[in-house]
Length: 99
Image 1: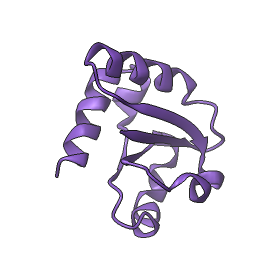
Image 2 (image 1 turned 90 degrees about the vertical axis):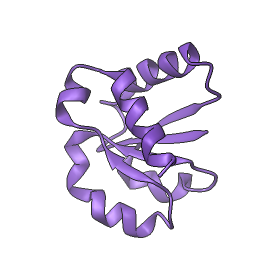
Image 3 (image 1 turned 180 degrees about the vertical axis):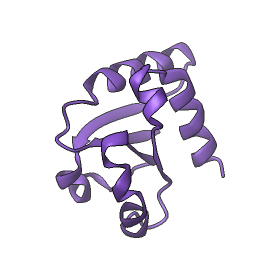
């Protein structure tokens, strides 16, 4: 599974990326998480299982869904992001992938 974690400049999601990687390892999931800036999203779309947006760019959710060609796209809630609740975020991503 290849997950893109997207934020405005690709920096504020670094901690969430590490937490998601740790959570995936705990669950024995084969997952790659990449934190990227929104401006580079189009360059990373190939082979992606899901795109998750940091709360600071949730305004772009509908536009990204339109350009994602069927790739599941979701925004992390501000509460889960603020608490770095990787377990809940990963649950939400898996639910979105399995829809």
